[in-house]
Length: 109
Length: 111
Image 1 (cartoon, rainbow over the protein chains, first blue to last red):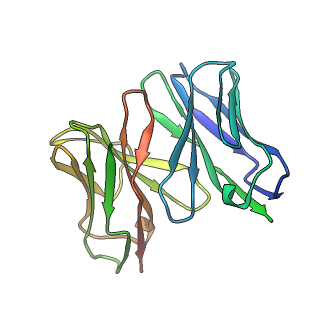
Image 2: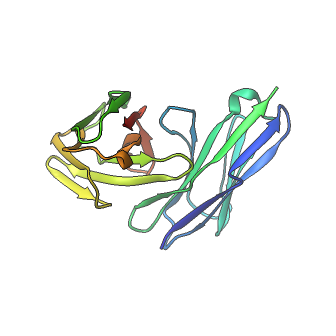
């Protein structure tokens, strides 16, 4: 059965303190791994898609990487506006999406 | 560009009352549409998906039902709400590249 585990559950950072979020997965035939950002009371906002091991994507202070068993979302020099819950999801060979529970990130000034 | 709308944004309903949440998509035709529920501290749970008008697939047996009366309209319903139906409900459509795009969500509280 497909499984997605995100860690840590919560992360508190000082502004400028870089860190990484982890998404480990087991899936039969990975079609894609997706990262989303979700603000409180809002729907998730799409960030990145990664398709194969070794792939990297960047957007502003965020960088996502992928290996055969996990993905990392690196936040470089975060700002308070980067505070959100970050969700990871994987799509299997049938196109079915499985979401992780998310990592709640709080960045303090 | 494509947009997705959900309403109402917030709903407080008594146990045993009916429910109707609506979702419409603009800027695309024949989209694959999804209803998810998000509970606090847990991942998104897929409830229903639809690949076309009148076609509904249910992922989890429950007190809810879905309908797709028009190409870009997706409705989540219940005849009698339970306390356990409380949650944050999200409608989404999927691009050909596999990314889901979500609406703003509907917060349902059942008392």
